[in-house]
Amino acid sequence: MSKVNSLTIDSRLASLYKPNVFTVPNVVMDSKAAVNQSIDSKRTLQSVFATMQWGWKGLLYLDITARNDWSSTLAHTDSKNTGFFYPSIGATWILNKTCSLPKWISFAKVRASWAEVGNDLPIGITNPVDIIMVGGSINVNTVEQRGDLKPEISSSIEFGTEWRFFHHRFGIDFTWYQTNTKNQLLRMDNPTGSTYKYRYVNAGKIRNQGFELTVDATPLLYRNFSWKSLINMSANKNKVVTLHPDYPEFSYYEEGFNAGYQMRVKEGGSLGDIYGNAFRRNEDGSIMVDETSKRPLGNTGNKDLLGNANPDFTMGWSNTLTYKNLELYFLIDFRFGGEVMSLTQSELDANGVTKVTEDARARGYVEYQGQKFNDPRAFYSAVGGRNAISEYYMYDATCIRLREVSLSYSFPKTILENSRFIKGIDVSLAARNLCFLKKEAPFDPDAVMSVGNNNQGVDVFGMPTTRNIGFNLRLTF
Image (cartoon, rainbow, N blue to C red; front, side, top):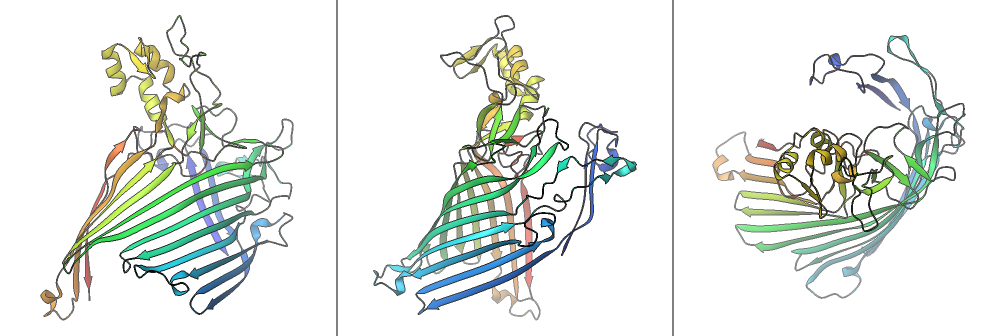
């Protein structure tokens, strides 16, 4: 059994007593604010689990598991008695112990697996009730319960291989996978005139497909000096194969949401798709301009697909150089592809307080996609703001950063021979997020509003990324 206690206070449209003081007592708790509290919400999970492992002569291995869960969150549904079952099976073949391979091949393995993983429902959604809020007001339930909700099930298939060469000084580990997730839980709008405004449904199938590749090497290996390097690469593509017979499209926001973006899920699309307002264009692709105000024209309603927040490809490159008791480590992260949006830049441009707008006023024009706009004030008043032409504020999320650097030293044991208590002393200096080597967005693409599906790739006055530097001392007794 697990308990959940939570308190969420959101100022929303409510004001603050003192500006820029973001504390709970400073929020004006009127009807414009929101309070959501959970006290001792309980989830009970009962399970039956079985596993079997089999090996043959150190060459072949087979692992089989089976599990069935019964969760209290499935109460009032058709699945409450059966729960949800998810098995797995995996096989491994050690090639170098089976086949005669060249001496420069130290190790070789292939593997394959198939597995299912189940998730139950959030607490309380199968039995929605009216809630008495702070101050005695009643929060009326607006969600319909039909008893047809099911647990989420993910089915995955994976193939991989691992090879080691030259007495394990060079290695490759490759994995290809495909995961299909069905019965994802979504809150949808009910048709107009229904008793309840919303309804939870289990939506169709989401497919993720990709690969992971790790290459490691020890290029230099001497008595007092060594250099170890590792490169990790990965790519993932997801696709919304099907949604729901009644809902071929889904938005994470309620009707009337007033901002220049929306995260929508459509059949044939992908999770992470960012929709917004694009420029209106002529047949030749040029941007339409109002003849009177000289303002560029844009669409409304956040119905234009502007990009996807997910990267096309990611890579990390780490190196460890050791000289006697001194060790230097650094990690460089690469992110290629994907698009992000900055509503921070949009709001600041609309108010004319950025260097970009200052330069445009001094120059006397704005140039965008080869087209000149001779009135910078009119241009930025049209594209900037909370809910304007958000296409202009889409940026390539490609970036390269020096993620981590550390320098450590281990004192020689000869210095500690006469110590009765201290057996080892290690000191290190470590730093993270030191700098960007390449970045096109006006903010850190990793520092977005949410890692969930509803706010991926969107920056709205987010906190700046911090650079961390620390010193560590470790004593061994």
